[in-house]
View 1: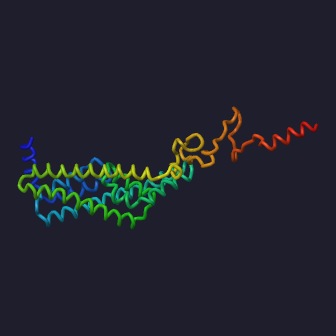
View 2: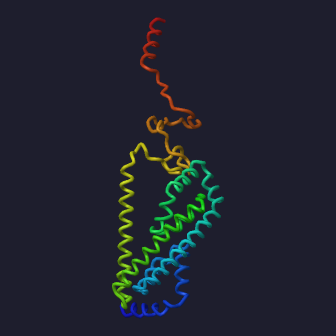
Length: 272
């Protein structure tokens, strides 16, 4: 197995001077924004390992990877904008609050979604389509995405450069080291994400939780687009309506007579 990897590494090293290799890096980094199965990070790390301690070409690799990723993300954003009318009609098909909720989530978390979403499986696809369909301005998207793609490209090249510098002339060992570091970083990111989600969930009181529009626990029959239950409905549940009658409209009131009213009625009957 190691002999095969050594032979494969030597074969790839012979293509480092070919312009086609750099074009492949650019294309794979871009297509990953719409086709999540494209191995963009693996390609960048592999080329960085094969380049070894060649700093100028490592810098060129980072620039090409970031440029390709930016171009792909812009294409995904444009596709999201093109699909915006159909998506808007679908979101507004139930109630206006469903559309406003979705747009509010993207507006509040656009920076995190664009910069950090690429480190999650399918995150680049979701980021581009969501920000495009919700109408995030091009200037804001490009600025945040340029930051995100730059960080991603430098991060991937550094991982490969560590492996290439540690085992110069031994690409197989360098690849194994770099891929091991990459897997470790993915695990750390996932653990931090899960811990952060649990911590944020514990900090939110039950009374402050916002019902997601369209959830099954909403008011009514749990139809898509229905809002969550009001506080009055939680404290005073609505009574079951008799069969054949329409829904209860307006606030639910206690129709039982109060103690003072019952006493006055009893006194009136005694006088009669």
